[in-house]
Amino acid sequence: MSNLPQRPDFLPIPNGAKDTLPFSDHEYEQRLTRLRTTMAKRSVSAVLLTSMHNVAYYSGFLYCAFGRPYGCVVTATDCITLSANIDYGQPWRRCYGNNVVYTDWRRDNYWRAAKSVLPENGTLGVESDHLTLLQKAKLDAFFTGRQVEDVSDDIMQLRMVKSAEEIALIKAGARIADIGGEAVRNAMTLGAREIDVAMAGRDAMELAIAKDFPDSEIRDSWVWFQSGLNTDGAHNPVTTRQLQRGDITSLNTFPMISGYYTALERTLFVGEVDDASLKIWNANVEAHELGMSMIRPGVSCAEICSVLNDFFASNNLLQYRTFGYGHSFGVLSHYYGREAGLEFREDIDTVLQSDMVVSMEPMLTIPNGEPGAGGYREHDILVVTESGAENITGFPYGPAHNIVSV
Image 1 (cartoon, rainbow, N blue to C red):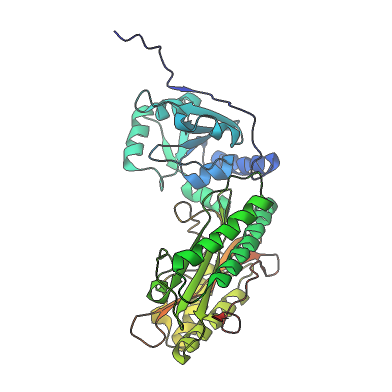
Image 2 (image 1 turned 180 degrees about the vertical axis):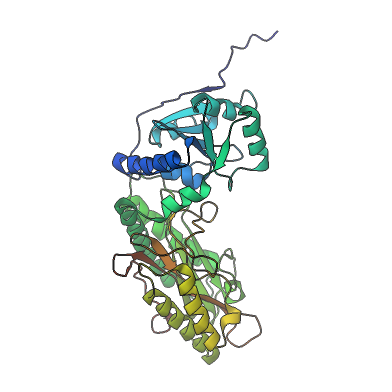
């Protein structure tokens, strides 16, 4: 018989004082109030949030899953994060509201912890786009007979319109992305590897975040710097390829501040640009400027996409477009979050309104072996205002600025 003491399935661990969160208490209360209004309209008594972006949006806590489930329970009166014992007191310090820690001593303690803080009755709201089949089966087993509703689209809609505090943070992020862009441009020399250039940009951004946001957790900022053939995809990882004269390159800086993503993306050439490449580059810049000119309240995402499609078609370039023309900003990253209802694509009818934050980022990819081969992309961030839009990206674009002397 074991003499080990009985260990709890879950417990509070308020280790230390609460840290400074990305936003004010008032901001989190406003978000929770809007969510609770939606819950009341849907007759949902509680919501179990499980995605990184929604847990962070409502509690300020950005978790590191490492194979473990995390969550945030929102009821009519409470906001309670659920975290794993491996993190001990950090989730308590970094969340708005309360925190319950589940232990590893028994399988499925996460669900026991969730059950302990959820109301016994009423409909439960979940994120169906995040729950895996395995976790949905466990939810059904622990909440037998409970009515479950998907609220993921409702919550996405709530996130798409930004508060004043969010816009201030996003503007700071855009400024820091420009700092990273300058560092990348300065590191572009003949023979430099993509990784060398990327590290210069990342280091500059992290130093700027540490200076301007000293209370934040410094994590997740990154740079994709691509050259030559490696520019053909928007999300191609960095390699050790060395820069050569005449290379097309793609500068992509992504500072992350408390889960909030911003971006700067630019086409640059090393030393010189050939005529075929210059023609395509100029066309993409023209599409970029056309797209930015249409961003204002009352215009739908599909309308903007249609106009840009017509422009590229008239220049016999539409076949080289590889994805939509822009997207929303907020709590998201390359491995979590997406506000799919606010993208400039044919199938998105969302109408722009004040305080939405979007990118304009047309991209053309010319296949290898054709004149002007490579990927061309410009990317600016715009805050939709009552009468138009404010461009918060400062780094210049186009051939007049981005043929880099080497």
